[in-house]
Length: 457
Image (cartoon, rainbow, N blue to C red):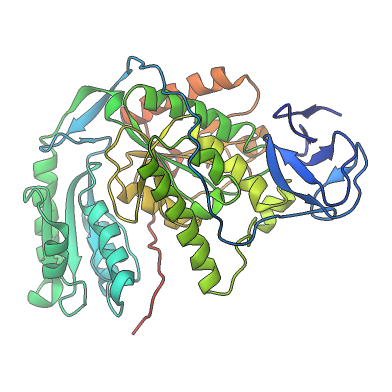
């Protein structure tokens, strides 16, 4: 059997054809199943050497909220000379990889108008169902995500489109957003004008004219902010795609760039790997709070903390959430964790940042974009056409999905050593930063979704 052993401490290997696990030795009932050098669950029966290890004979160990001690164990990366990209430099010094005009509704009631304006002008609208009938933190999350998109430097101009009577009206959104470039951000409340389409077209044309003056300039990759995401994972994801992305993460961070890792429930069972790499006790404490708050969110709703992986994950060879999480965090490479962010906060510290948010694909990529990520490295073993507000580079964990869904997939991580594939992926990142379109952009797959946890009036 062609198989790979990921870590010398492992007692299972991974079949290179199927992604499923097999025992390297006898594993007694109740003993840990080890993969990536860490427990991914325990044996529910005696498992013989060579037997398949999956849902029929192993189970998760995840459960209650835990306490942790700060035991740092990381190496600061040696500084690396950045490569150069060609980007749009904004008034405040931020860079954008695109110079698009976006339409951001403050409320779902104006989605149809936003779409019509998009059809008339070519601007890209990001519709959503929120912005009214929300209370407290639920409304605040919506405002924070919209603020992050409104200020995103990939947009050469933004029309913020409101209704007028909603909770999150134009005045509220302006106050919440703080300072902004008036040449790059325009506002329109449709209840306050007779011809909302005519007014909207006029404002978008002003934004397009202003953006047309912008030109790409050479800047170092230390200016880059990359988002890290996986969706439709399989048994290969943590070995190929996520490991390759992890090598790129280390490279970007060593150059002085920023990487952002989210999907907090897919850190459960792998959090200690990240906690050991926190650069200070303060960052560690924020990380513990991040994990335990999200576990409490599950508990508050009467759901088990281990309610994962998905049916597709299991079919692809992933058995428990610990296994999925240990594969998921490979995207963060070995980079030290420099900060922990809440919803709507912008990543500003060079290095690896952890971001509060669920694992849901479309919510995650929106969350990463709102945190300021210029592009997203999205690994997948099962395949997905999904794309967000920013370029979403789809990275396949296996050649089968890369070939069968080549109209979705930008890059296959399978077939060569990790360094070779990481170098190839870095070259693709340079080309995308310089303007090459990702498959989601070519296909027009551009969507947003906002996390919701509150009362609807």
